[in-house]
Image (cartoon, rainbow, N blue to C red; front, side):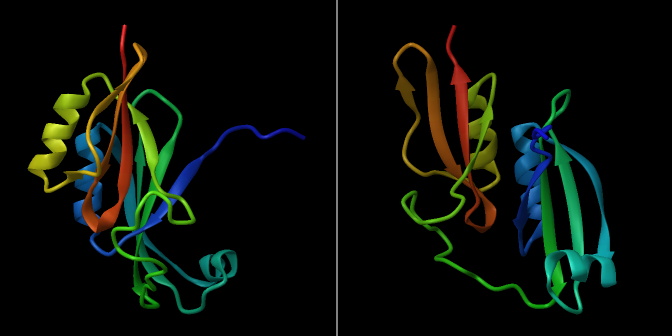
Length: 146
């Protein structure tokens, strides 16, 4: 038995519209959005009386999705500082390969995102950066150099 693919990464958010806009600005597409509740989801995630709105975003023409969940019930719990540094335990970022890192960073900044550090060049291979978006979500961006 072998793994077939990574299907998606879940991010729990408080402002679903803002986070959808952030990922759409990177280049993802909204694949669907709607309510999720009932005994089946409670049994899967091990939480009672769940009411949430879920949005699925996909990378156009490629595998890989991000699932966003906004809980109406129960109340969300913050497990770490809002703007946790890179050395905090847990998932720190999702990395995307982009065609033009400067363009993506500028579009994200127009939505209120900030560079975590700076855009740097790794040898003659990549230009890289981390960007902090809504709710402290950090994405990595990588532009492959020719």
